[in-house]
Length: 234
Image (tube, rainbow, N blue to C red; front, top):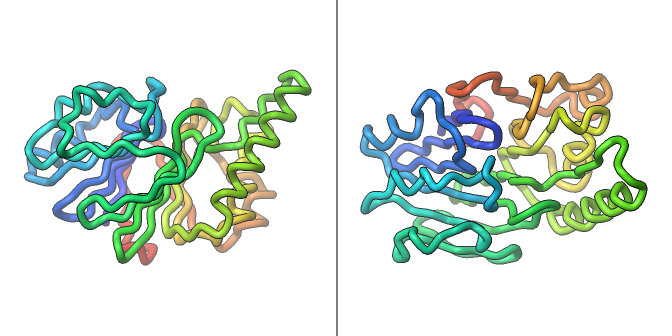
């Protein structure tokens, strides 16, 4: 399998005959279009309705083999009903050869865990500890408690690949969510930051000291790609 970075929280996993596209928003290098032109099946996963995670442009890729797996808050009436799966947090369903579980979020929508039978792939959507420096004490407490609750729900979840927000706007708290998640789940074979909203993430010395043996892949621009097999993800 090969992982492509599209933009923001958008990624495509090329699994051979099928491509799994998460939170498509922008695709400057037309990775998804090229995959479809190569005859691959496109499966779109949408964690929630926010404009930086969902684009109605995904309907332009609709074909007899295109699938849509979306959180229930995503506009889906125009999606082809026989090939659209609408999910709520806490649900698990089988779509083709995949077992898909939807976990929660600390914003809108949910997050996806895909089990291919050989590997498990997690896209967090907007699941994070959204600690905004300078916010009100009440909002700070709410964000902390909400994050604690949702991380408790994923405790023990096994994933070979984790795609997770590391947002520059959170400043000193940029890594807090990732650290808390990695406290409650086994370390993945590969951790990939997303939702940067600013400078590319440079892991702090503290983060490195906690997870010095955990492989990281930090994409820098649209079109960057990595071979997941190099990390034992097949």
